[in-house]
Image (cartoon, rainbow, N blue to C red; front, side, top):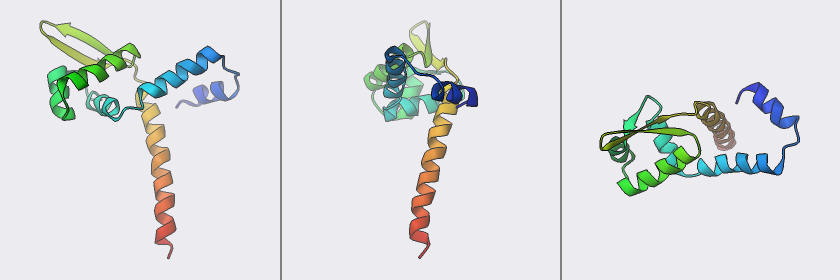
Length: 118
């Protein structure tokens, strides 16, 4: 997360509406299939069919999660003929995921060191 965003949150009393919006973003990202779809779209747009094959789940399940990500403003959807293509709309999703992954990695290293220090 950019330092200015962290500083803004830490030095500002947020309204209930703002807190609900932030919680909604985290709720949207709380589904593993949605995170997998975001990762699959990291290198560019893909069709629903491509995403379904890569995510190894059903097309209705992929479509449901894509709809939630579009509604949240994270992805964009473009219809071309009979095929829908999806791409990342909100690039801030990647630094957010990186912060979370880095923190989890550090926690796991600390836990592993507890057992390695025998």
